Image 1 (cartoon, one colour):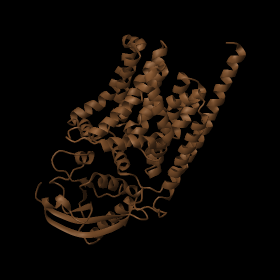
Image 2: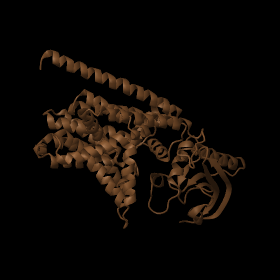
Image 3: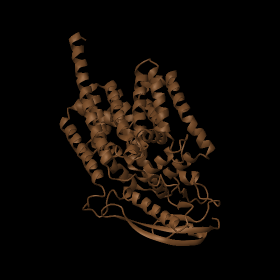
Image 4: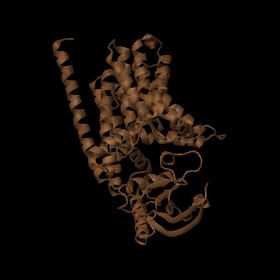
Length: 495
């Protein structure tokens, strides 16, 4: 290549990288602003992860430990407010976009890398995820870095790609067990790329897998010492024991992917997948192998049982690069611009929606933010009942909840309350709170039961004294309410 041509290529790469940095900086600034303007309370999963972070461990009932460690680091540096709990999300998504640039740059060029990174950063699913904290956030970063490492392992004889892949794979397993799909995707790729099967004789591949295994080993030991709690929960989530099939749920999950990935990008992915049956180059086979099997399996999972829309999230790391590279190659600039326009509109709508949640009455039958509103008021009402009892000289020894969501929300919004918050447990634990802070026969009486609804539920059957002390109808947005009942329980007589 002539020196002048090389200089022009380098200049173009620098220009595209500059465009990417400006775009990601603008998106991050917007998301940080939206985070601090966000009027929603923590969703109960977020509150649960925060509670985990208060007690660092090698594992938790329903998830590996990385999410708790990340939140712990964020709240140590920033504080315990909702924005601080959620702060890692926009930061990690920005890092994932940079990793996708790296992937696109290695597979194609800087233009594809930059456009892929910006496309990923504006996906509707990412825009929603950037305003909450979830296990998918670190998982996607680990997946992108592991995919870069795997490709470089295939195309070079250097050692560091194997280390990158191994560390990212191990960290991903500690974020969410769904990272194991990475090994399945490697297998699918090698099935359709026989010329690459020589990697099976490359010791670096096994080094990467050993590094990943070593990183997840402490969590496996934690599971062993805790009756494999996380594995049992994961199996329960899959729920393959049912006898009925659910084509409606499969269609619902499939349709939801147009919202997660964006309607134009997901439609394009389907077209690309259809065309690929006539042949695809090595890069396309790699990207298809790390996206379609995940989507296909989760559709099957939904057909057999159920699936949440985000369960196929790792597929969209490779799918973003594939779709953008194809659009650039085919000159489909109109579709690309339209996709950015739609996805940015969704981003802005989410930012405005969360900032005005609970403050503006929406012309809808149900407030879409109702599940993340009103929990602070529930905690305040609970603390008011504790104060009334203490003022009357009959303080409650503990607050009791028989619902994981309620327990998590009370733990977060009553974090400065000295009265312990306990979980009602019958038999084996069904969540982390039942495992680590259960009500027991040794708990002093009376206890304050807090429940959604107007009855004490089955908990009442285990006490000789059950007295309703208050009913509260609390707001959960402008047009939604939450009925909360408070009971004084004493005389525990066993399950």
